Structure formats: structure tokens, C-alpha cells
Length: 352
Ligand code: NAD
Image 1: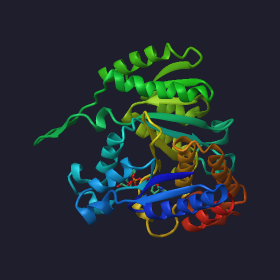
Image 2: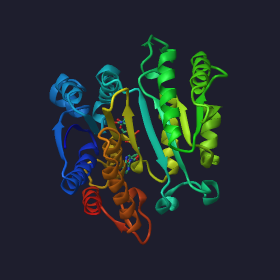
Image 3: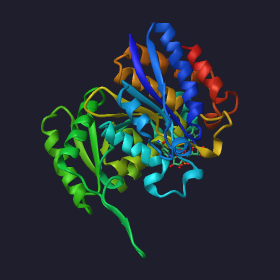
Image 4: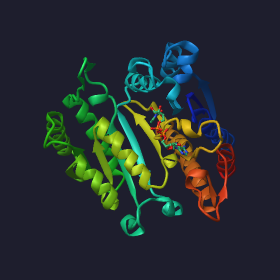
């Protein structure tokens, strides 16, 4: 079978982690006899430098014509002083909106092999951590009305009930194949948008009696993730709260370099990317961890292309590399074998 895929390497460590993931993709191709046709396009700072805008029309067209999008990361200090409309990060917001990708799925799984890399005490981790943050991605404060005056600035958190309804359905559907528990996180004691959020999520829940739903304020949720992470299964939340809480959940799994994400909408097409950014502090040194990108690739194989067996083989290869003691610098500990970005990609590809 032939699959069309847009590949956006982006900035910083983006090209290194994508190149490592493509080694794995090529191995999947050889092993299973598929054909993945990769269409490369510019995005972020690299696109600003070459075309003067973070999301050139050609890039958007390539993404719209593809079955799925694999993204590295965008941004970096070279473009930090640009106005927000022209910054690399704007490309991501526009791309998600244009592709209708309103649901961001961020699994945070603490692999037993990396328990010693978690900043949490073993007594807090307990039986482990396996949660899924379902973050609303195309609404809320990142897209609301904003402005700056001489001595003030503002951003607006605004949600329509249809936006809450569809992301709530995604969370309940995801929970069906997990532990059937959804915690909806908001700030309904203070924010009008959160009051609507809580009411709407409760209404959608009526169609999912088999799923347990509870509500939690975001400040308490942050505390609970750090102190009792094992209580969570699916966390459903808004764009900004999800952005923050998923980084927190990621950190306690050992390294932000381990966690994949998928952004999906109504159809099968999605965008798959690590949750971390372009890590300019380590870019170009061949030391970034490519596992989050490789695991994002696995999510793409499963969700966008329906290739579950292939996805499992990739996930298993990552776990085997860890079992055999291979580590990148961010998760390295005494007695393990240190690998660079490319070498880790080669190792995982060889274990497919
Ligand atoms: P970051 O995630 O890039 O880096 C945070 C820390 O984690 C850094 O110390 C970095 O070295 C480390 N890190 C990140 N990924 C790693 C990996 N794969 N392996 C090992 N270590 C890794 O976040 P930041 O420093 O806040 O942002 C840097 C740039 O990335 C900014 O321009 C920001 O806007 C952008 N950003 C982009 C995305 C995206 O493209 N989706 C997401 C977040 C931030």
C-alpha cells in the first residue's frame, strides 16, 4: 500500500530527530512492504529565512494533499524578536486550524526502564504512570482576541459549546479503550469559559454512562499530577491548561524527549510530533533524544494509516533499545550505553 506523508523538519533539533525517525520509517517500509512517499516542506524559522513567512502556501498545500503530517519542531532565539504574527510558532497554530486538528492527544507513560529518570520518588510513582492528556487545540486563549496598549495587554479565553462538545467526545471515546476514567480540568470557580466547559462536558457525558467523569480545578490538578499521578487515566482540558499540564506529566515520565503526540480532527489525517520544542540549546550536536518523534511516528502508523501491527513493532523496538541499555544523554545513567540521535535512530530501526 502507498501512503503520502508531509514531512516538516522545522528548526533546532527538528532536522536531527526527523532524520532519525525516517530511518525507522524506511525499516518499516522494507519489513512490511509498504511505500511511504515523503513530501518535504519548509516550516517555522527555516521558512521565514527562505520564504519570508513561517507557513508558506506551498507547505500548507503539501500538508492538505497528504494523508498525514510528521513534524519536528519550530522556533528558536533567531526569530524571538519578530512580532507574534510572523514568529515560527504561528505556523503551527495556523496549520492545526487549517487542517481542522482540534484534538491533541498526549500520552504520558512512565516506562519501567526509565523509572530512575523520573524526578518523583518511587513511593509517589507507585504502580506507574499511564495517562492521556486530551487537549483542545484550536480554541481558547491562544486564538482569542488579543491586543496591546501603551500600558496594558490582553488575551481572551473564549470557547463555543460545539468546540467543547467535540473534544469531550474525543476524550470519552479514548477512555473507552483505557481505564474508562475521565477527569475534566478547568477553572470553573473563576472563569466563565470554564463554567460553560464544565456544563457542556457533563452534558456530553450523558451519552457515555460506562465512563466515570469527575471535574478538577487546574491548580489542584497540577498538584495531584505531582503527588498522586496514578489516579489519572484521561485528562480532558482546554488549550492552555493542556499545554501546561502535559509538560508537567511529561517531566515526571523522565524526559520530555520521550513523549509523542497526535493532533487529530474529524477525518483520519492528523499531525504527529514530539511534545517538546526545537531545543536550540542542544541543536546540531547529535545529542537530542529522537524517541518522542519515533513514538509519534508509531501513533501516525496506527491512527492515520490503520497500521497497528507496524505501530506496535516500532513501540516494541523503542522498549527493546531501552531494555538493552541504550540511552541518549537526557536519560543516561551510570552503566548504560550512550548513543547520539542518529545512532539511536539506527539502533531502533535495527530492532524493528
Ligand atoms: P524545548 O522543549 O525546546 O526545550 C526544553 C528543554 O528540554 C531544553 O533544555 C531542551 O534541551 C530539552 N529537550 C527538548 N527536547 C529534547 C530532546 N528531544 N532530547 C533531549 N532534550 C530535549 O522548550 P523551550 O526551550 O521552551 O523552547 C525552545 C523553542 O521551541 C522555542 O522557540 C519555543 O517556542 C519552541 N517550541 C516549539 C514547539 C513545537 O514546535 N511544537 C513546542 C514547544 C516549544
